[in-house]
Length: 316
Image (cartoon, rainbow, N blue to C red):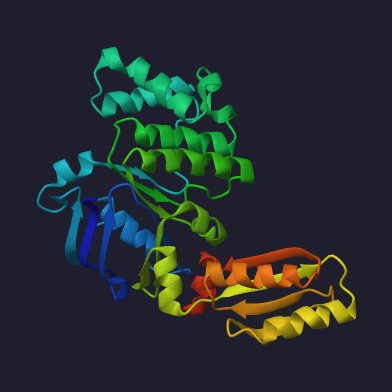
């Protein structure tokens, strides 16, 4: 896959504050890249620079191979930007709002009505075609703005906190829309503080702190780099002290289990360093010993665990 967003030595300064410190980053076509970090980490400054809204102090930004400084028109034609809390024209109808931006994007008049209907359907707002924007819920407004961003069919999407303030259903709808866009080959850079969702939503993440990109890569690459472990939990159907002790000692003798612990609910927890095959072997052996396993769960660190491992304590 080709590189669709390329940053080289990107730096952003505000008077005596260094908001973004010499970031290098490449994001490929079809990738959903999540950018997370604590307050003041520089996420929004970096995103605004990539979107062409904020002029960086120095550094190179390329969008779909076009240098944003040398070829701004070509670069920005490839890009769709959705800010956090974007303004809307509340007294317009939904279709009118999209029609206005379709005209601004130079979509021919004969194609606008079809484009508007297409994207309203994509974001599940067809039934709100004639509704006033002021009567829409927060989630509907976010989906409408996403439809506006997608109208010119950009290859690259830059989204700053697109799920902020949305309820779980609206977040899922937003996530599904963006997954579909990525499956169609669009590149998505998304800033979000909803860390637990990113492990399901993004196929790569970057963690910023104090203007620096502290770690970047796929979730699995970052887990390996930080030495993350899996957490194994075993629950028994008949958790008698004898049965619990039997499983506890069996796991304790495994080279893949460490930091053994029993809970008040008679569950057994440990850090697990083995592979999927190792976990399957342990489960098979426990079953053969007729220990009546009720639940056997092996969970890897999620994005929030990874985030905390690098020392970030306050998420924005």
